[in-house]
Image (cartoon, rainbow over all chains, first blue to last red):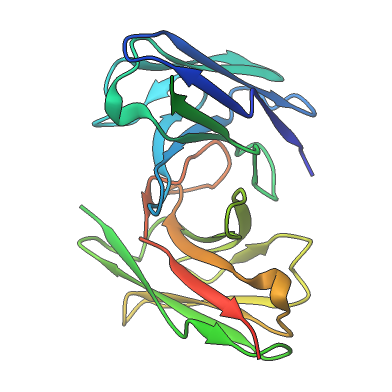
Length: 107
Length: 121
């Protein structure tokens, strides 16, 4: 199985801050990396697919980058509705695997 | 816009079989890969498996011996059965839509709201 490691596991930030979350795969996965946002009591929502493609309807302040084993999710200017937990997920091989999550909290 | 809705018992006894159904509306089930994912309370996401509309399946190796996913295209439903459950199977179970022609390289773009299943006597 491909292990996905996210860092940090949590962070505190203020509205307007630039936030960066990293995800590392245990082996190269090309650009087969997806990012999700999950709010408490809700299902995850796809934000970014194939490392850098913005899912339809997702605000442009979200962006993704990376390839191989190292990936980044960036929120350019954090908004109140962005406080949530973010997960990366590889779709390079079965079983699909997720990172442990990064909780973005209000500072 | 496609919508997914999980249904099934919220309480299952240890050693019994967990059975859930996901109903697809607002779109066709006769395309795409259809997935099950679970999330234990306060923990992260675990992929369980998928089924293609034509019936092909793939399961997580850690659950493969206990899992069956099936599809009924006439009812626009796909189902999950997990047998010999223990307390470790207590989780919110989600159904989700995957890629159109492949799961590899694709994200899970539509999710059900999730249903909590508790394993307890």
